[in-house]
Length: 435
Image (cartoon, rainbow, N blue to C red; front, side):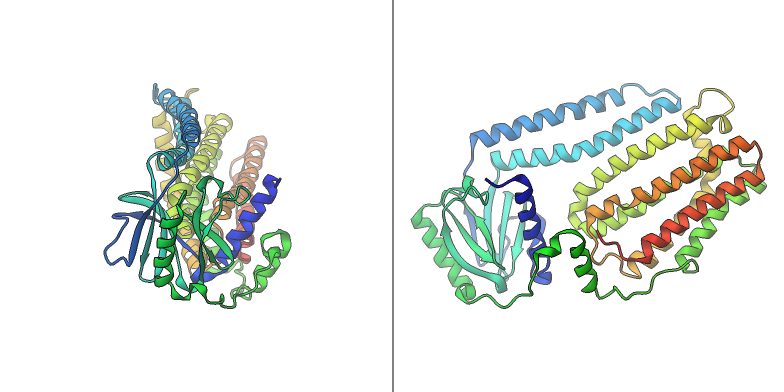
């Protein structure tokens, strides 16, 4: 019996092999509109076996996961007073619900698909398209005729996960088996095979020579080394402290000096400003994820916003708990106090927005850092930098309070934060991200 780890490795290896095909890799996409588009050479609604057990289990999971979602939404919006704590509770609940809703949405899609969906096959523009969905909405993949081989009727195999299909059809794609349909009788299967073989006359030819894809590419440090060696941008010169994005970052970090010198900013304003910069970093990271994930950002995006937003809200409460007396005169901090504080910081925050925007366009796009990046790794990217930055400014903030002085201690805080931020910036962009 195969262990879950071995199954996971097999799936990862298969995904890597497919990705290595480049332009010939299967193209996965969400389809909106008629499932049988005009000009199709062949279109078929495939037999689709429904299991009452699977429908019941998926529906039960959907119900179990949906109850906490609506419970949290109800309690979070039940009461909102004009104070920071209730605002934090509301935002944390909403961010948690947004992240949780991704799982609920996926479970809902699975339940609807197994209970009411159908599988279709379309041949259009010499491509074979397999989709699972409904008449005007579906999810599927396109396969290039160059690598389609050996159409056949296949027996179910529990090891490969095709047991639920019963006797079904399959073809080979770059050495991988792609199954479709379920519980197809011999007569219908033969008719479909004859039609597919006539539309793909090369399906019985030998497979063209493909680049060798080593298993080590999927595992450990050897994978990173091989990927780096084959990367056409590996020789690209690293950025330095006097690169455009670095200079913009330095300038933005010096903005708080103007607030200290001319607007009487104290430690509270500085800490709140550096906290707000995290939101700017999260915004540009979401743009990077959108470019890497394409339509999958519909799933990655809400999860990232929910998790990252909850992370931000927790830090906001921490900052006001320790430095709130420097921001508000009374013991209670109202929402209007928070809005007033943020408006005071708007010009400096705009500087950070421009700085990170320069880095986004000059490095991610200009130096094409998106090449070889994975959306999952990109989603995790900002956390390490922000944690280092926040540890630095919190340490500096307590140092300022202990010294009980103004300008010298605040200057030290800014220097500490700038040093940590610039170091993280150079480390992030000095080398391509290898995850």
